[in-house]
Image 1 (tube, each protein chain N blue to C red):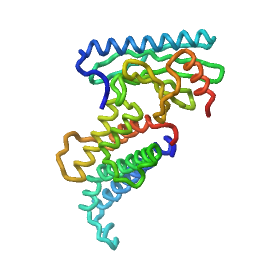
Image 2 (image 1 turned 45 degrees about the vertical axis):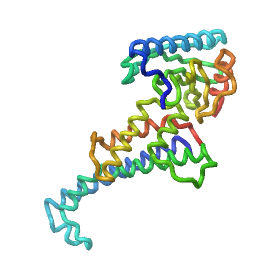
Image 3 (image 1 turned 30 degrees about the vertical axis):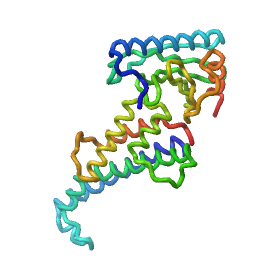
Image 4 (image 1 turned 135 degrees about the vertical axis):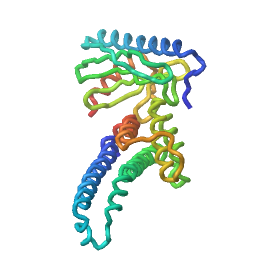
Length: 153
Length: 134
């Protein structure tokens, strides 16, 4: 993988998020004006579904974003430590720290990435949210972490 | 997991880091001028929670094979006591100059230690390698 490809993974999630938000918001607006516009849909989409979808869309894409980040880090770590293939998966918290140590990544960059991981985990496991983060915040933080990976591995 | 010394007062730590950055930027400036390479210097503002805001020297070098930039990254890094990057522009080929156990060590972007110590010879060799690599 190359660093450019890693950035592209995050960028493609951002593009999908932008498209999804645009589409759902547009459909929601139409449904508010004309609720019968949804009646032809076989899956019985209701205006409230669209409202909930919009409300949760950003977090849904933060989860996607983090999944891509995790994929990149695991791919990098496997390339760096091929003998460990097949062993138990390293927890993301530890993986982030191990890669940070290998690559001498600034402490604040690592802490920020761990904040995104905590935020993602709090949502997945319905835990306490210490600090709200936007999709843009998360992408910026995770992309900054990836900027410390080599050009290719 | 960082190896810096957190017990040292903030001002002392920042002063120490500024002195390290000055030493490295002065060395690479002098070595580059000795090689008849064009050198320009500028400052960039960095902020780290532990030591606050400070000015860091950035050295831009024009070698016969391309541009090289020497740029401080941070005092607080995982697995080392400080980090300064050497990278070619626009290829972004990069080598890290990290401080470990009180001395500077070169490490490749993939985390492999450069076999030679930090010196004028290794800098000139790296400048050539980084700027000519695709």
